[in-house]
Amino acid sequence: MSKYLQNLKGQQNQVLTRLAFSYKFGGFVGFSLFPIIRHPVDSGKIAIFKKQNQVSNYKRALGALSKRIVDDVEGFKDFTINEESLEHPVDDREWMNAIDPMKAKLLSEKGKLKVLQNELAMSIEYRQATLATDPANFDNKDALSGTSQFSHTDSDPIKKIEEIKQTVADEINCKPEELTLLISSPVWQVIKNHSKLLERIKYTDRGIITENIGKEIFEVKNLIIGRATHSHGETKESMWGNNIICCYVPETIESIEEPVFGATVRQEGYPIVLSYREERSSSTVTQYKDALEPVIVNSKAGFLLQNCIAE
Image 1 (cartoon, rainbow, N blue to C red):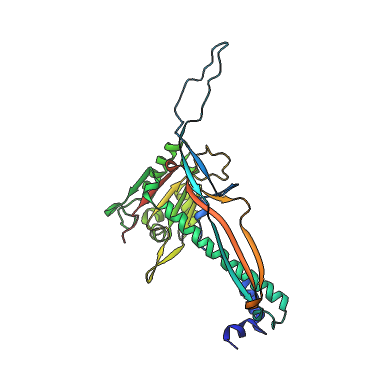
Image 2 (cartoon, helix red, strand yellow):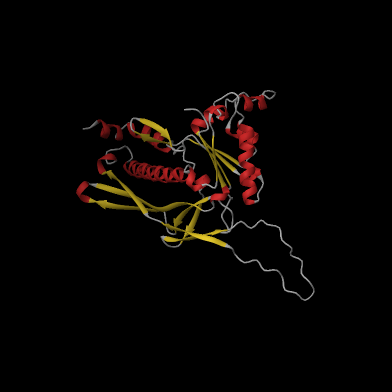
């Protein structure tokens, strides 16, 4: 009997129960920049509206008609949603000889489903990060160098982030504190120890800069740390690179005219979880399907700051 099967049976079953229920997915933050919107079919168009915050005269003379606002569409962005599907078998031998076979079977199936969800979550996070770190997707962008990089003692992260917030706010006519800030993990590890930030808390009992404290210092609606990594040859690299992304993300997308930076379009009816019997392998197969596509909706509603630290 293999060691794998031994660990699934007998007295090991109780340990596995605790381990399985404590397993968590970590580090995925892409939906914080690309919230989900539903779409009935697997393709469509998103209307891109022109900037409409110019001041006009809306006074109406006696007997005159009201001034009429007509949608001023700049163009349309096509999108196509492809289904992604993964499956994982649960061999009968994984649970038949356990202390509580039915509980062990359900636990195994639940664990396999989490693995499948995690795999697809990693895939969509990578696509979201690829979009959000591509300078071609931004009207507003900048790259730091030399003493302006936050790894240099003479830099000023607070001042720079205030500038990029104001740029986005002016573009879409919102308050700077309504914006979301995503900082890649390598950049955050440097920024949270920067003298300019530590200066802000030196008279408090807070010894370190946490994400919540960073949110207060930078005065943003949300501060998110992009911690997900992917393999690049023999090394692991941050999916979010050496970047800071500032953008407008509403709580819910209620109108396509809202100046949202990006969205993840999910086809109606997804995600789907299926289970079927495969006798030839003596297994019950758990299958997970989803249909998601991240898109940039309004390139003016975001700012990409690149090369934030020296590498």
